[in-house]
Length: 362
Ligand SMILES: [Mn+2]
Image 1 (cartoon, helix red, strand yellow):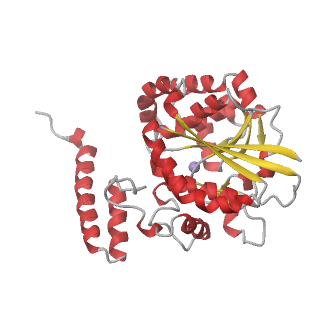
Image 2 (cartoon, rainbow, N blue to C red; image 1 turned 135 degrees about the vertical axis):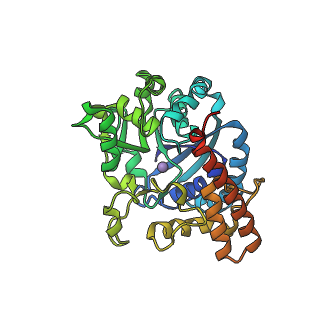
Image 3 (cartoon, rainbow, N blue to C red; image 1 turned 90 degrees about the vertical axis):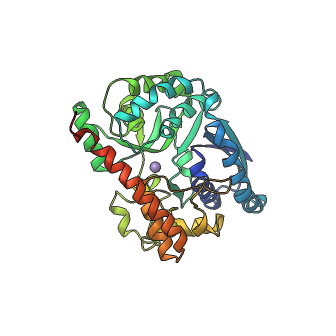
């Protein structure tokens, strides 16, 4: 009997408690290792979040997932360990937190600070373990990750999958010297932590990010620049299938080779766990079928006010507009009216802010 460990890393805040639970459930469901009866697998799941969100996330996962997977695990050769880590315990956290507002103002506005967590978490883990599979939480697993995890990355920093043509071109506009190189999507990273640690990659990344470069995708651009093509292994697209962006996935049917990791990148406000997701799309439909298992009442899992139970509540003008329409369709008239009023209010504020510079000076 051999014993193999699989280390997986997620970085999130409380708003992603449900998606991360769906993802973990999907990973375990697709880990029936038929081919390797002699091997015991141990899955270590590292969850990094700001301290204030940790208990919320932990409670959600425990109450929604543990009871369901425990029965699945008993007959299996798979054991599961959770590690909950506070971001603040990473030594680099405060340094980056101070610089981050000015960085994010320069880059894409919809990115949050949480996108930088992975750099800190990877740095922290590199002191403890040799290899980790980092996954974005907007991913669904639909095949075994054992083959992926066992790819030999000893001579590289990481194994990655190429990003879309569009993102690549945008990167090359900032860095013309990149013309003959690849550009990867950082939603899936199989990281050689030993080499990462030796070569102080996180420190180099942070220095790069706080420098004055106007990056498109924040740390993803930095990762591409610092890791550089020649220190990477490029994997088939099925290990990070950008289903919204990459048209090849439109035609795939269930009999053919389905992606192993389905990445809902580029959906912004229409992520597949949101109430307004388009169920005519097969990938959204697939996601919802996994989600139903975790959260049978998922149609009501959002609400107007935050409380212990609530995982997502509308915050922006667009959120409220969306919720007003959604509630109306469900004949929840009162909620719909409340959302519509809030939408109009925020719209008015945003409108004023947008044109504030145009006022005549006295
Ligand atoms: Mn993503």
